[in-house]
Length: 146
Image (cartoon, rainbow, N blue to C red; front, side, top):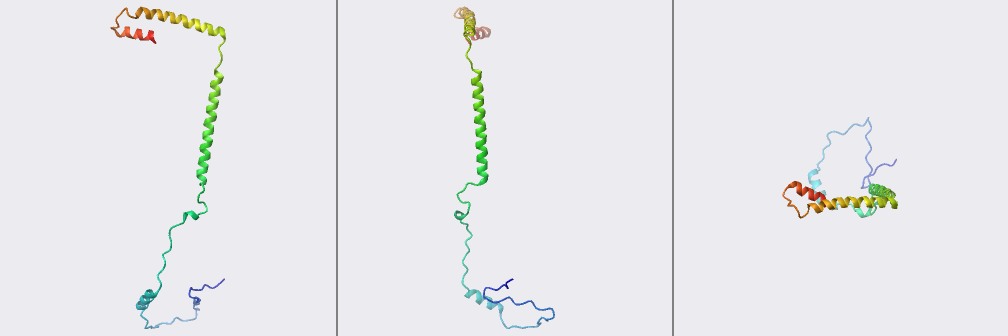
């Protein structure tokens, strides 16, 4: 171990032995107040230490933090999952679409024509002949129109 040295080059005084007696009643004519004042007046002023950190010199400057990369990856994973679900849903809708056989198509057209004839006849009876003075008549006409 090295002995610690003060800035002015002197070594720290050793610890007194247990059999050495302290010196009592030592009197000095030194005026410590004046001596400290003179020492401080003659001392060079201390330069202020720069407390501002230079963030440009940090090792992580300009790099994306790990937690943000983790969150970004989670968002992209979730986006991909939603996109896959939409593709599956669209595929399911496409599977449900099919061409109707020609015989079933002709039956459906015939049934719709019969229904249209019945509604058209009733509509022709209701139009311009009667006044629409009651709520029931108005509702009946609206059901025939739609």
